[in-house]
Amino acid sequence: MPTAATTATLAIDGGQPVSPTMVPFMKPQLHQQDIDAAHAVLESGMLRAATRCAELEERFATISDARHSLTCSNGTAALQLAYAALFSPGDEILVPAWTFIATATMIVAAGCTPVFVDCLEDTFQMDPEDAAKKITPKTRGIAATHLYGCPVDINAFQALATKHDLKVVYDAAQAHLARYDGKGLGAFGDVVTYSFYATKNLGTGEGGLVTTNDDAIARDIALLRSHGETEKYLHERIGFNYRMNDITGAIGCSRLDRLPQETAARQAAAKRFDAILAEIEGLDAPTITATAEPAWHLYTVKFDPTQFTCTRDRFIDTLKAEGVPTAVHYPRATSDQPALAQWNKNDTPVSSGLTSRVFSLPMHHALTDEHFDTIAKAMSKVAGAYRG
Ligand SMILES: Cc1ncc(COP(=O)(O)O)c(C=O)c1O
Image 1 (cartoon, helix red, strand yellow):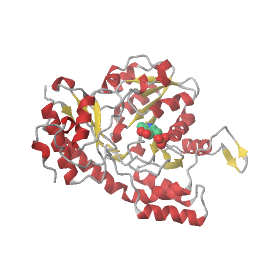
Image 2 (cartoon, protein in one colour):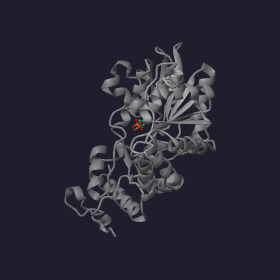
Image 3 (cartoon, rainbow, N blue to C red):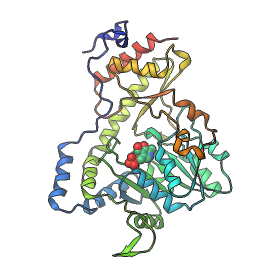
Image 4 (tube, rainbow, N blue to C red):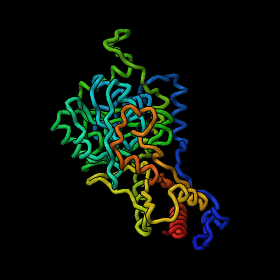
């Protein structure tokens, strides 16, 4: 058991660390059942999208309260399919300045204009009031991310969409099984997109999925996903090849068996982190959007530089030396990325300012009591040492 929490000297300065071994930051490993499922597909020889992708689609639709669900090659492709189905070149689409880059870049890929909306300081989620201010006669849509696995203020965005006749895409790449107002995320908006990248709550290596409740949108996305083909070698519209394959589908189905229980473990971990942070002034737990039940892809803490004598970077380097790795999501606001400079109006100051103030704690279903103990002791030791 770690015993060094009371040792005054920080490990970064040569003292004894709280834990000699690192708390694992994530736990993406496969179980034997996942490997067996993939093997069975390999042995069948049916490598393309077939029964296992269809099963994943059906089960994912049910579990997220959506009518239609379509697998695809990754979460970026899912966004591109959604935007291509809903928007036309030249449309302005409101998008968070604080999200993963693909939410915004795929708007550009669809020939549309991303209009950056700031995030809220407490939830880190897209700010509906700032979004309302940025609506122009060219605005056709909202692309809102359920960032870190925590749903955005869906009611506010749906009200805005109704008022201005906008389509809404929710990027739920980080939010499998999150809920809002007691319903799965598939119940809201025009299209919801997911990623099954290796480190996601449901990771298949690469992979993605879109859900919708609209029959015509589902048909369009199915066409766009596979060369716009309506029957063998008849192509009704320009499309892509963004199909999944059955090896990925099988891994997805197998991991989906465990997802509810792994999500519950993440939710329990978040409660333990809330309790740890409640004791430490200057480190704020994430605030949850009203009526949201997060899936906790990431648990991201806000560092108040006025409360400490060190920077956020020094704080997290010091935590790492004590045995607690962290990561920064994100080191740069999406609006401040060089690739998106031409659309950056420098009017999203909260997002730009968060880059030097946030860090994410280890978050996964396999955290143990010992890990929580290490994290609590390390956070309190480091915060105590740098108390301003
Ligand atoms: C919010 C968000 N959107 C989109 C993506 C893109 O997903 P993928 O990596 O599967 O293309 C990610 C992946 O990191 C993400 O976190």
